[in-house]
Length: 48
Image 1: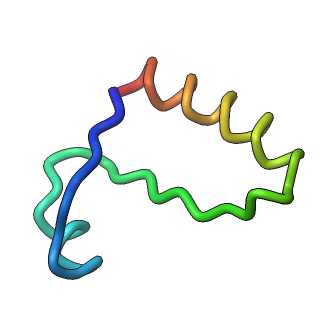
Image 2: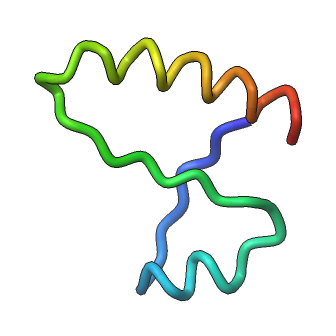
């Protein structure tokens, strides 16, 4: 389940999380990225 969070600092977000955090960095021009992202998100969604 994806949750969008607001935070004051990246360190704060990671330190205060009760679950693993998946951070998404991407470029819109990278088509290969979208296929990798979809399979990765499906994997994490099933696990957590």
